[in-house]
Length: 220
Picture 1 (cartoon, helix red, strand yellow):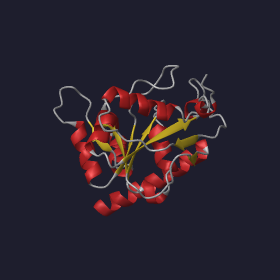
Picture 2 (cartoon, rainbow, N blue to C red; picture 1 turned 90 degrees about the horizontal axis):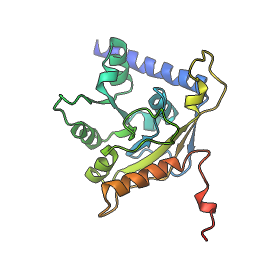
Picture 3 (cartoon, rainbow, N blue to C red; picture 1 turned 120 degrees about the vertical axis):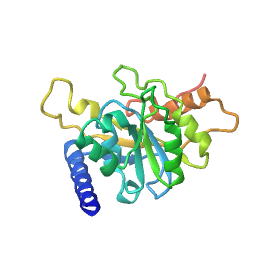
Picture 4 (cartoon, helix red, strand yellow; picture 1 turned 30 degrees about the vertical axis):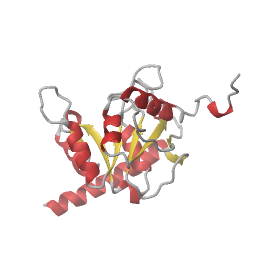
């Protein structure tokens, strides 16, 4: 039975990856880092339920095999299909967001890192439905950086996914999605939580296709 579930998970993952690539023509732009087998935490913007599969699908096989998305248990355990796909196909680190639950999400995250996994996280904590590029970051990314300072924290901007299927439309628009991976960051010695989160947010927002080219700005 375990072998059959593993086989089914592998087949389902392959199918999801092909579907995502067919629908979005997603490509990776390794702008600030190389796609080498190294433990990392990829942190990304979040506007759609398709964000996590997009990053997962665009990673090379050698990276995809060791990456684990951090995801909400209440979403992925809501029905039998999600309960199979989340834990067994994507190998998610499931965290329970209900206030009455005494589990500490950071304990599960650090345990996954100590087992050698790379992670995918969305530091905004929820989907951004506003006109702002990003919502304020939660403290989780900062806590990961403090707990395991040797691990690269890599910003990953997902572009065009929220415009492929606009609200009310039934036919996807023919747009190419990109996932742009930027230069890694770390929590600096003595850096406060607010200062780090502001710097992390900027490192991610600067990867937007329409972001100002700060390198070319002239300082008066």
